[in-house]
Amino acid sequence: MMSQLSDLVGLFEDSGIATAIRENDTLFPFIESVHVVAICLVVGTIVALDLRLLGLASAGRPVSRLATAILPVTWGAFAIAATSGFLLFISNATKYLANGYFDAKIILICAAGLNMIVFHAISAKKMAKDMPQWEREARPPLPARIAGGLSILLWIAVVACGRWIGFTMNVL
Image (tube, rainbow, N blue to C red; front, top):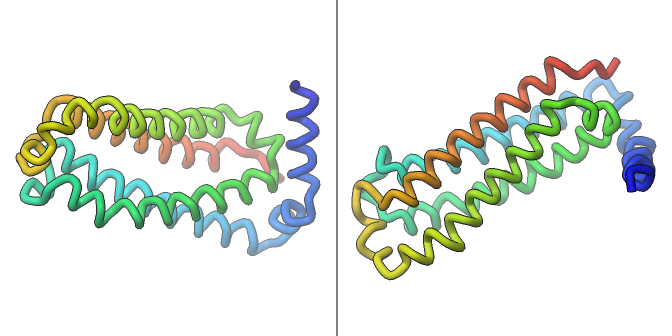
């Protein structure tokens, strides 16, 4: 299994696009800039919705209305962040995989996704019958507030790990 993973990582790292990103003086910084802007949009839009779930912002707007307005931007920015992140990863895949902050960032992104899935699949279903009422209240029910608070903490940790990757990678 590890041999297959090493082969796959080597295949990506040895590709023409990875080599171009790694060896071009402007390509890596350009892709990294796109990645950072996309992450800012992802985290910013998620935090806006999470603050509503916490009852700390946009208290006069129903949660569903805010989500409908924000989530298309979130998902578009996430697609750009994932694509640019993958391109950065393949440029030095072996070194990224050996970096604990990179590993932590990936795990934290998965945890944030799991938090969202659990909130939508379990908590939202339990609260669904009361949703027309609670989503208009300034302070949503406890499960919504917990999901929002946990989401903010996870995304702050993702950003922190992302920054630490840059300070701990020795790619030259």
